[in-house]
Image (cartoon, rainbow, N blue to C red):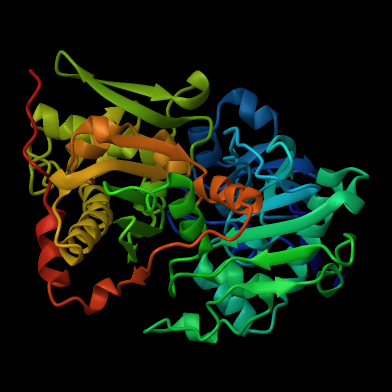
Length: 498
Ligand code: FES
């Protein structure tokens, strides 16, 4: 190590880096999967790290964002910190619940063990199944170790194109997860199925991600990829069949294919929709006659990423907001003083603002202050509401355009499944109030990890299911896209609550 540098180790991913002694940490940590939502101005509280070894002085913004106990426990804002000595830091952003799946399933006459893997950009969820009975025998979840190359798919693509080996990293991590899942029963594993978005598919399979780096995002390698354990360095029997399921398009991966299987949307006549809300929103709508799907760039608002006081769903985040007798009531994770707001709280807060009349359907704050106070120091700024309008406009317009393709309307839908973590936590009533989805509430359900559930169903199926045609639609090339997007930016009229 250069004497002018200090070593920083980031847990729980065990990422090591060197940074110049006495310099702000933000330069060193950016590019290693740590996000600085307010750009490092010390105003969002989103970059908390806990000092596990070494020490960092307490700064003024630390006192603002952390309780006395948290500061004593070592919590600091990474963007304000300067390292004078080697440090081990635990990254608050890397701790999150990983959505698994508990649904019971029946075996279909196969024998041996199978492993289902949902390879997400942020998290990985795996389950080992007894193929004869359908029983889940073991579950392993983890962070995707590629997070040290950046938190979103675009930064992973950039890292891969710059020559970083993201393939070996993720294959190695999955090999270890499989070893602990199987726990000595590796010899019995006969089949492994992986699902994930198109970038995860390409990086795991060692395919060129260059076509995914620019429009029109057409890769020639969207198909199913099959491997032998030796190809991947996994200690499984030589004849164990491993496959990464096919992608549906440039930004619609096999996680959505598995979701289509999990929701059973292709089994009946009724129209069913699957919506996965994230930075990249994915939508599939269809029935036994066919499915249309698309991705839409919603941006990070649903994860509160672009919101001034936005933060992940961690201690101090406002996660729910309600309106009663004209007063805003906020629920804070951990029951502490509020420090910021996460995605579900944001949707609730805007819904409450619309109901109280404090936010107009145009998105403008009614009293002209450009501030919508929620609780304690947490407020929404006018541009935050705009960010949510852009995100909900992207999803709602995508939804409408897909329905148009099917020559259908929202009243014909029999069921809408909201997949993924955000879909699990958002209050459906609030999502409807802001116009994210415009259907009766009783049709909308939080569907959990449909990718993992679908992967398990594919494992258990006696043979690969025959699905109707799944057509990938490029929304950006639809002539009505811009108009529909602009229409969907406004909020609907909601019944005001006194
Ligand atoms: S990035 Fe550190 S407080 Fe916002």
